[in-house]
Every structure is written in C-alpha cells, then in structure tokens.
Image 1 (tube, rainbow, N blue to C red):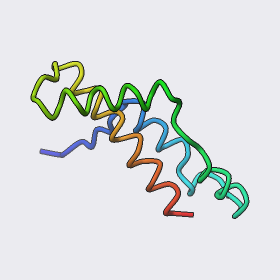
Image 2 (image 1 turned 180 degrees about the horizontal axis):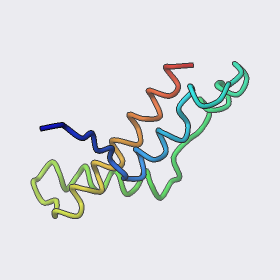
Image 3 (image 1 turned 120 degrees about the vertical axis):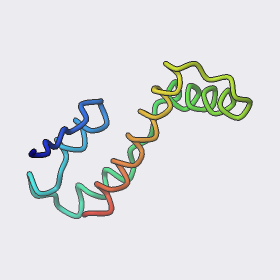
Image 4 (image 1 turned 30 degrees about the horizontal axis):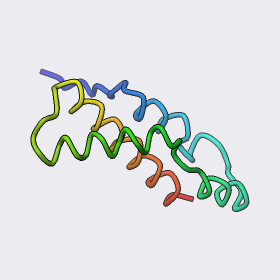
Length: 84
C-alpha cells in the first residue's frame, strides 16, 4: 500500500508555494521591502474579534477555520522572510 502526500490548498498554503524562495531569487532590498508589509486595518480588526471570541470559547466552526487561515498566513510569511 503506497502513501500519497496531499498538500493543503487553502490560501496560505497556495501563497507559500507561490513565494517559495527556491522558485525565484530575491535581493536583500526586496526582502527588506517585504518586512514593511502590514495587514490591512480590517484584517487586524477581524483577528482581534476572532481572538476575543476564542478566549471565551465562542468561535463557530467557520470562525475556527478563519482564525486558522490567519495563523497559517502569518506562519508562512515568517517562514518566507526567515528563509531569505
């Protein structure tokens, strides 16, 4: 019986594959520009809202998936920047 590796296809995973440094060169200047990227105010507000609901145990199933997507996007961004 052979095992098949299935890659996730959520937005964070797709973005991580697209910006994989093995796929294209990135200068130090470009990497520094990435460090200046910031979340939109609406995303910050939504993350705060989800975090507050999570602290009191009130996240719906959809919100749990949404907060995980935010977490994954952050992790993928940090991994990308650390690899440069």
